[in-house]
Image (cartoon, rainbow, N blue to C red; front, side, top):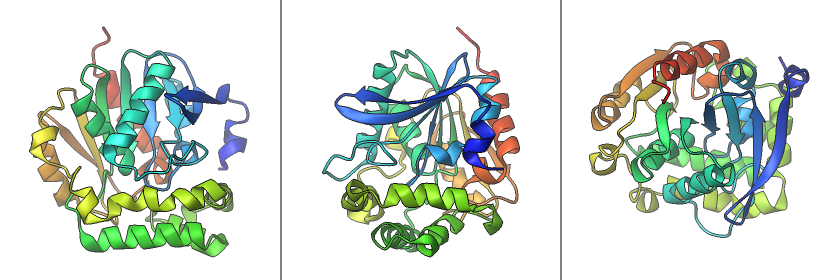
Length: 284
């Protein structure tokens, strides 16, 4: 399955919005309750390409390139979780949305949780997809930072492929088209300037400002599902338990035979997790 060929007969829009002065890339498909999908560190809209068709049958699916990522503008400053959260708020305001479902993968899951805690009343429910390295493991931060910077500043087919393969349990899921899409993003001059802002959260001194902690996690007052995998290179299923305890009433599900991108490797199963969980939320 390819990304754009699979979407060719699907009615969707790929456009830009002004999010408080930040030109932001958006892909939208479907109707109904809005569902915003957030990618991970170094990611982009295409990370959810295999989910758009299935989810758009149930929701108004809105994928964005987050602050500094993909083809969204890249301000010259480090990107903290608060920066991503503020940008998400501005996108929601630019689209004139009142309430949304949120699902974020890796960094996107961290941002979704932070957003729900700090901007109450907008997120209706959350699916936090492999939010990753919740214990701030130094070896994971080092690997993610080095592989991301190398893939960007020394961008070629093999380096980008290696960065993508790190995300997958089944390495064959890394397609030439996905590599090409990411290569074109990483070779933008603006992206090469911004990459150090993107990996700022992989430095512990900066990261500690946003670490998972009851002081803010306990403020999340909407239904929350943690979607973990059995082969996540950033954290084990056991490491999900402290987060589950921090977020009141949160649930945990495990997608088997997947790495850090279950939404890509196990697209149908992941879509079912999203649909089943959000369909339980009463519509006001």
